[in-house]
Length: 330
Image 1 (cartoon, helix red, strand yellow):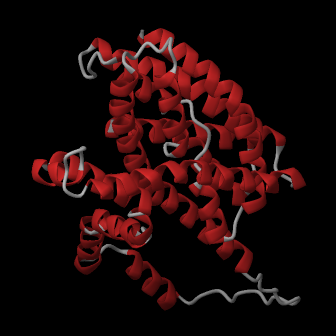
Image 2: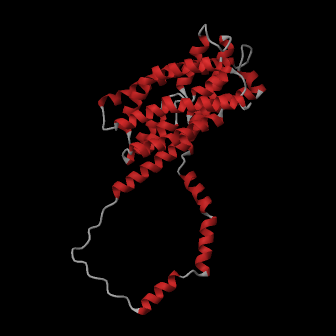
Image 3: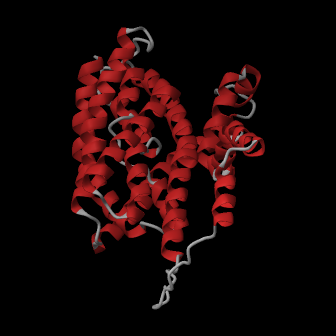
């Protein structure tokens, strides 16, 4: 599951890079395009889709209760891994992109004087000194060696300094980690989970809050889409390209990758597990990208338009791909 999520981010980034080279959007949209193409909505949408499919009478995934139990476990792990990658990888990309934009907009061109005097011919001693400075010395060679040896370390430090670890451990990630910890450790699980558990009221309360959170997040998503109705100067081909990446190219690549992994024995034969892996390739962009756009002050209105069209077409695209994926794994 974590490897598959990472692959979706890598393939999405590669396709986004190709899209940027073809459409040549404005500079301030490059980080946004990379984020929209690489990060899918691995949180609330699968949490809605999987229970609905499990409850269907013609579901190919067996008994509804067992399907729901395992399906929610798969989706929770997918959500946790996706949240970490969004708040590390995508966050870093959009932060670097916003910094570059602010630097370019903040630079002030210096005016040159009208009368530029000709540079006098340098003397021979000056030429000799300049030539001597260009010659390699032992000290300069040592500096080059030191800079090469510290190059990788400095790049890693640069990346880590741009990562906000407070955002990496978002509430969804902490909740998923806590849930998996409780489920893995038998004494804690028996103490909290089950009809005979002493603190089963904690499980009931958490379940009620989780059930209420799903429609709440969906309402927030709908409210965010209203900003896209106002319209902005978002390039048309940028929107079309993101939709093609998320709903055509990534799902096709996902089918090849997941079925190839099944063929080589890297993925178990569980149809529900394979369906969740395939579904990760056919989801619209993640909502957290809008939070990052507001945080860095770049591309908020453009993201609203992208989200509006992406989620307007998601009802068709996700339905068709889900139907095909169920037929494929069954």
